[in-house]
Amino acid sequence: MQDMAERFQAVIGFSDNNGGVEVPAIAAAMGAAIIEKHFVLDNNDQTFDARFSLNKNDFKEMVDRIRAEEKIMGSVKYGPQTEPEKYNRRFRRSLFVSQNIKKGDKFTSENIRSVRPANGLETKYYDEVLGKKAVKDIEFGTPLSWDLIS
Image 1 (tube, rainbow, N blue to C red):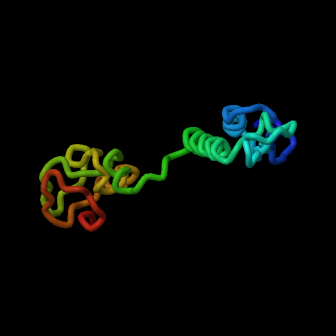
Image 2 (image 1 turned 135 degrees about the vertical axis):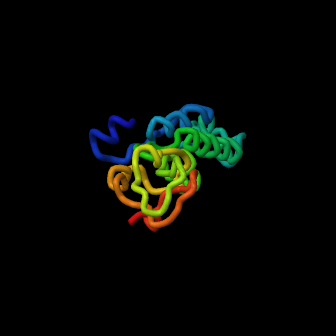
Image 3 (image 1 turned 135 degrees about the horizontal axis):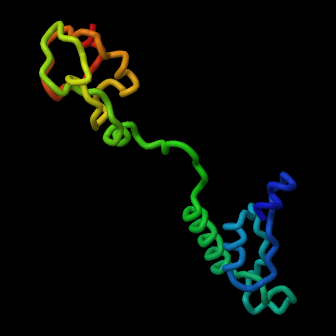
């Protein structure tokens, strides 16, 4: 079904003439966007297609299964997940002061480090910060920020 959708650039459906709710749920998981299923109001109906039709309870079960499988299948996403920034920051690195620095001292590879969490300047600014001077005394463990740099 996925191949047909891509090949023909069309919405693909599935017409089910089997009894039960499993096949339509599988079809939906395989890419069917439309499910055609026979429906019967009365299970005692003697029409030809009554034997492979669903009553209202079975129909609800089929829809519930399809919705559950849609959740299980999820969606395709490439790249970073869109998590709240506060969770992302815990795992990213940033620049911190790794030794006490006096006002006027230069930032060096000895007194700044890239560590977690990302509460300081982004690590991409490391080379830009090296050689610049501290505008005030800065204690060990302080997240580096532009207002500390001249």
